[in-house]
Length: 191
Image 1 (tube, rainbow, N blue to C red):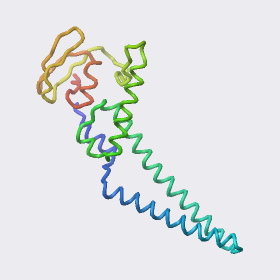
Image 2: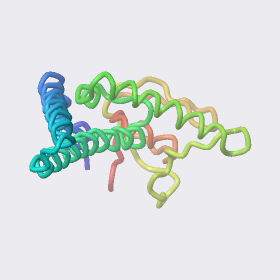
Image 3: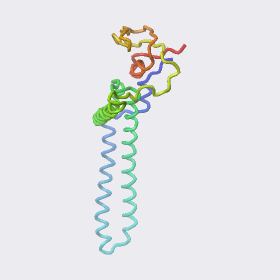
Image 4: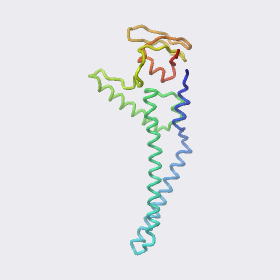
C-alpha cells in the first residue's frame, strides 16, 4: 500500500498563498485599526457627556477582540500543523510541502527542529535519544521495504552497506527505515 504523503500533508496544510493571505490579514488589521480609531474618538466624546455612544464603543471593542481571536487562531493552527510536519517528515521537508509554507513559517520550522534536536541530544545520558523514532509501537523489528527512488548506499548497524535503487526490495531494521519511509524514499511492503 503506497501513501502519497505530499497530497496528504498538503490537504492538512493549506497553501500559504502569500498575496491572498497577506492581503486578507492586512485587510483585517486595517479594519481593526479603523475600529480602534473610531473607538478612541467616541471614547473621548463619551467622556464629555455623550453616554449614548457607549453601546457602539462596546460593539466595536467586541469586534476588535473577535478579529484578534480569528487571526491568532488561524496562525496558531498553521503552527501546530507545521510542528506536526517535523514529527512526520523529520528535519528535511519535501519541496511539495515547503511550497505550502511562507518564509516566516519555514524560519519557524527550522528553529523548532533545532530546539527539538537540542532537547533530544540532552536526553539519554549524553548519547541522546531520538524521540521521532517508533512513533507507532513496532510489531516486528524488521520490515520489508521497497525503494521508490535511487538513494545510494545505506549503512545499517552491523556495518553492512546496502544499495538502495529504485524498485529494489530489502528486509531492514524498522528503526533504520522509518525516517526514509516518511521522506518518501522507501515504502513499507505489506504482505
